[in-house]
Amino acid sequence: MARNKVIAGEYEGSMVMGFVTPGIYATPSTPIELTKENVANYEVITEDHRKSATSGIARGLVGGALLGPVGLLAGLTAKTKGTHVIAIEFNDGNKSLIEIDEKLYKALIQRLF
Image (cartoon, rainbow, N blue to C red; front, side, top):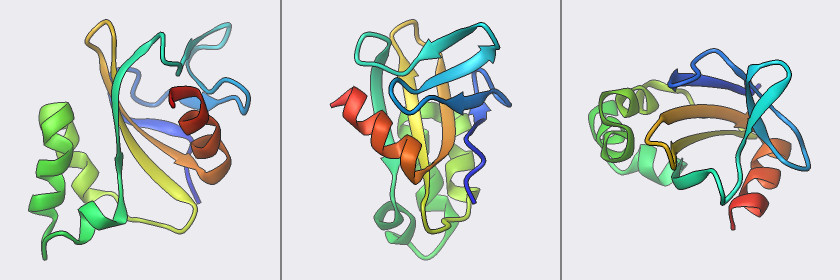
């Protein structure tokens, strides 16, 4: 089951919520909205990325391309059905690695399309 949290990088430990406009709740009253206006770049760490090599090293390099050392954690995450790991780079240069469930994933992709 997805944690719906920031698992690495800026805002680590913060909840990710909102099915209309997903956001990172670093503070309870003011979410950081995950929209085209706030997100400069994102990468879904897919099963294909994970299976592209026989070890976690290649998966870490995929995440490392966007998040540097923080992205290496993407190679360590276990894929569970309905769980998605996404590397996000914000317009202000902050970077986060989030783990979200299927509902949040669909909402996020719609907002960032």
